[in-house]
Image (cartoon, rainbow, N blue to C red; front, side, top):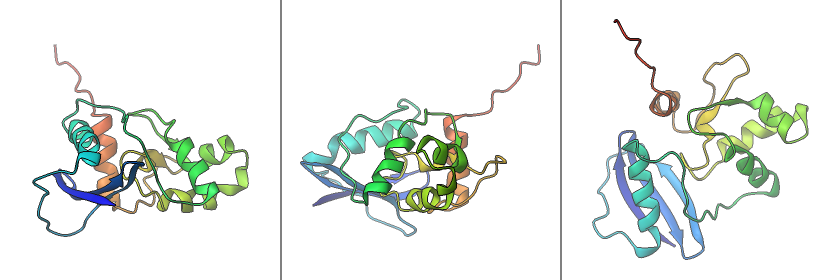
Length: 157
């Protein structure tokens, strides 16, 4: 497994993967030293994540290889369908997965997402529109949602 550490507006981020794909992207809650020489297997992911933060990318095309249970992977596949700038509720996700009562299981799978930003768990909100649960901290979730859907200033003229 190879890794690289990059700085983002939300803190240092570690990217791990190999020739089979990217298995982990996680924000670190600590100071870090950025990786100078990015391993070949990670270059596309590093570039695309930087483009995301520069607002020149709205989706990712590199190969994903997350570890998880069958159910978690099913939830993560559904998360990948939430478009940039849009949100879904945990209830909506549960319905799409075919079990309205699975809200807590969906939330748990969401919390275990190993691919921060790429599998967009930050786009899942409470049914009432509230920001709920985010492993990276609610302030990061709020930042990401605003980054993807900046408020349009109305013209004064």
